[in-house]
Amino acid sequence: MFNLTYEFKLKPTQNQVEIFEEWLETHRRVYNHALAERKDWYKSRSCQVNACSLVSEYIIRADAPRPTFASQCKSLTAARKENEYLKRVNAQSLQQTLRRLEKAFVSMWEQNHGFPRFKKRDRMRSFSFPQLGQNPLSNRYVKLPVIGVVKVRQSRDIPDGGVIKQARVVKRVSGWYVMLTVQWDVSVPSPLPHGEAVGIDVGLTSFVATSNGLLVKRPRFFVDALRKLKLLQQRVSRKRIGSNNWKKAHKKVATEHEYVANCRKDWHRKLSHQICNNAGMVFVEDLNLVGLSRGMLGKHCLDAGFGQFFNILEQTCFKRDVYFQKIDSRKTSQICPNCGTETGKKELSERIHVCSNCGYTTDRDIAAAQVVAIRGLAAVGHTVKMLAEGKFIGIPVKQESPAF
Image 1: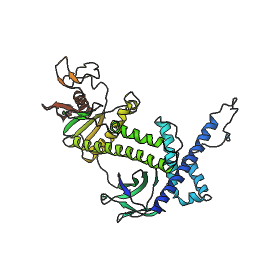
Image 2: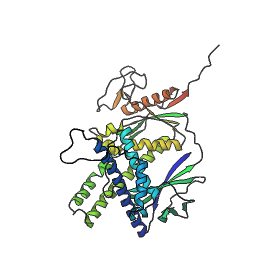
Image 3: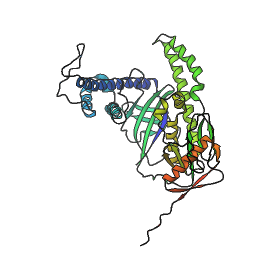
Image 4: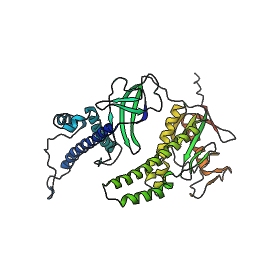
């Protein structure tokens, strides 16, 4: 199976916008109610037997089972028979909200994420339909369960042979969007290592340094917008909370944030295509992005968007038949790519790599990218052949048959 997600902008009527807003509020209340039920069960089990709180305590029967996705779906089915607001919303869509809460708890247990939090107003921004009818997208309209036909700005056609399996309606400051997940009953093989190898080193001085000598300066999308954001946020703080002027000022702040995010994503996509133009293999560092975001330069690391760039680059490599792999990032700036000698740690002010053993001199970031390329070729079982221009060609290692 092969899945792709297509995003289109919706053009709903005023009546449909009101339905979307009402559904989002219902989904938010269902999410918060299910989270409160789970949280109360956990709190009731955290009390010591011989030392209960004198102020308040959660009292739930000892034999009460832990709330799960299945049990809360049963409770939701019973509640829909009595609650008028729940009846108006698609039942499968509400179950997907409970599934989202289940995924949040799984991420907390398995990936060490934080405890799920309650969603205040305007924090629930999407709801999904796990099942659609036959041909839900036709003639520039998308047919959603219960809601009906909604006009959509279909910017491109969907290839034939695919089946729309899921739809997600998303609210943004610029309008409403629908994300359609299309599935093809085909098996697409992963790209194999071939052609020229390109190693990539990312940083804050140069956003990207490649092993073939490309240096791309880091654009400061968020930092350049700080001055305007500060002015807009000051205007928000001077308005009475909840008033119409407060909502208008708040919308301007959200519009500026969305503009910054769109500029960053568009630049990442263009850069990823530029890197894949003459490459057969792309190797990047396997960085601890969470640790970088919590460091002294965390704001600048988040502004650069290393994680988003790696995801977009991996998708671009897959579409353009380029092999992609992450490589160990330890000591990439401390090893000479020419002779393999470890030169020791460098200060951040040292931007030139000079090997004391062989005298190889180049930019520090380019040297690190060349080390990444060498490690990547070794990881895929290729020998390294370096050309005069700094390009790396991977030659597969021939497996000799044993002599008997």
